[in-house]
Each structure stands twice: as structure tokens, then as C-alpha cells.
Length: 403
Image (tube, rainbow, N blue to C red; front, side, top):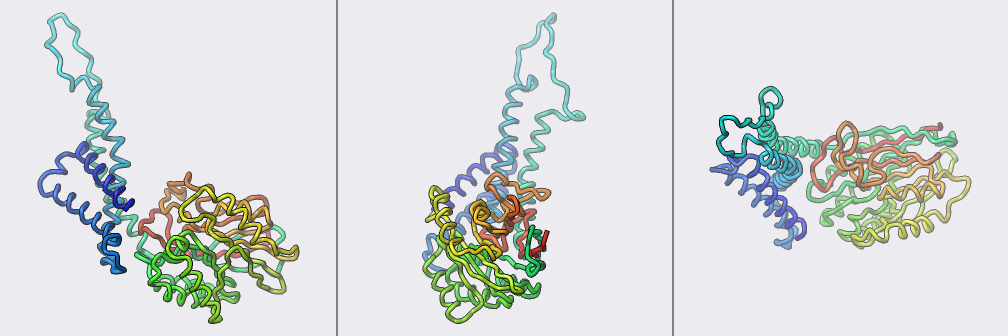
């Protein structure tokens, strides 16, 4: 119930902001459109909680509710400062404050000159305020389109000092944060695996947050098992596997391995492959938090590192898979040449390549280096909210090169 309650507060806030910025917008038929849209959106968010079944509303209705909610959030964030500033200008502007008639010998108050070509400050703020709902609707539409246009195949070259010649050109395909469920289906997942097959990568990896809807678990595993990479697919768990049904997910991976499928799950463990006579150990660690508590993250990462890296040998090249990118520090300390992670979705919004929420994570998007050790954080292959702006969903193909 937390999410609908928060959205209700956002809708009330958006209504108050619009009333301050553009009162005419909340009159007549427009008022009922805005009110009806808010009620519809709340009903869509509440439906899974109240219905208590696995019946889903039409995708178009769910996407409309997401767009409406994002528009309301933008109205609150962008419109509140303008509304407050205009209120301050109204208080300070002499031309809006009534005054007593002046005596013949009194000095008239000096009226501030009009701003920007004859337009007063209040007029500027009024026009800016009226642009806010248009900005919100436009941004929401573009973001929804960005989230619905499918993934891009992104090529990344990783140069590692001292990389053995046998691994020069070794290719890894990465998918992460697919979130099979409300907005992503198993057909989409199968297409991402097919893209890695077509790219002829040597190893495929899935770095967590695979699924949200366990009703689609069988189809999800079947899609992963379509992997045709030489060394198969290695996977790790994300927070959503822990939240949605860890036992069911662990069981599905175990059954896949029993069937002799190409998919292997690593939970604080490692797997060794041999490529061109060179041993490569891939370490996979569990998601470091229990439930939704962040207080235990550092200690659980330390425990995972001690357990997962215990069998590494000096003649091996070590790679690491982690859902949470903060594990990079532990992986680098224990010799992992390259760590692959996800979790952040790159913030799903970026301007000129810079994530809008860069402050939310130490490692948000792209490549990072610590000495001779590197980290790549994917922007995510799917999403749990179909809104992306400047951070398209990606299937990543990483090619190792000797520096």
C-alpha cells in the first residue's frame, strides 16, 4: 500500500501546483479529465493489491498509469520552485501592492523596469509555470517511448594489462535487470539471448534481477536455456529474486542444471572454464542484503567475498559477477580483473551521457577502474518501470583485449 499512498500524495501535490501556476487548467472539462486520470492511475496501481489474483490489467492501461504518475512527479518537482518564486515576487513587487494616494510634493516609488523585452518577472514566471504541464507530458511520452523501443546491442572493449594471449579477443555477453513480469515478457528475454548467440560470444552472463512474476518462471528458464555460447551462461541473484520468491528461483535454476542445460547459477561460488588452454575462474556472489535492509550490506559483501574467492589459484584469470556494483572494491582486492554488475539501471535517465541520479550509487553506469582492475555497470536490459531517457536498455558484448 505504500506506493499508492505515495502516489496519492504526489497527485494532490500536482493538483496544488497546477492550481498555483495555471488556475484555468483546473476549470470546466479539463478539471474532470485531470481528476479522472488520477483516479484511473491510482486504481491501476491498487488493482494487484486488492484483487489478490494473478489477473493483469491490459498493458496499455498499465503504461498509461505509469505515464500519468511520472507526469505528476515532474509537475511537482519542476513546478513547486516556480510557484514559490512567483509567490515571493507577488509579495515583493511594488506594482501589486496597493498604496495611498500621493501628495503633490511626494516622490513616487520607483517601479522596477520590465524584464526581458517588456515582460515582467511575474509574466515570465507565469509563462514558465504554464510550460510545466507541457514539459511533464512531453518528457513522460518520450521516456515511455524510450522504455518500449527494445534493447540496443552495445559493444565494449576492455583492455586488461597482462591478459594472456589465449584470452585476447574473449567475448562476454551480459544481460541484467531484465525484470520479466508486468512490462517485460519471456519473448523479450529470448530475443536478448538470441542477440548474444548471433554475436557469437564465448560466454553469456546474467547479473541478477531476472524475474518479478513467478508465473512466467518456466518460460523464463526456457529462454535462458536457448543460450548457444561455447561456455554456456553463468548467472547470479539480484534483490528481486530475493523479494519475489527465492526458493522458487533457486529450484528453477537447479532443475535447469539437472536437465543438462547451459545455465549455471553461482551463489557465493565460482566456476572454472578453459579457453585456449587458459583457465578462467568466474566468481559469482549473492545479493548482499536480506529483505530490504541496507544495514548489513558491508558485512554480507565481506562474507560473500571470503567464501566465493576461496578457491582462486595464481594461474587463473579471475572475473567476477555481482548484481550490486559496490562489490567491485572486494573483487578488486581479491584479484578479479573484471567485474560485471547491474542493479542501478543507470538511473534510467541521463542527459548528455551523465546519469541524472549520479549521486545514488558509487558506481552508477559504465566503466570504472581501480589499478589494473575494472568494473562495468550495465544500464540494464529491461526495467520494472517502462521509462527511459538517455539510458536505453542494453545487451552488452564485452571483448577482452591485452593492454
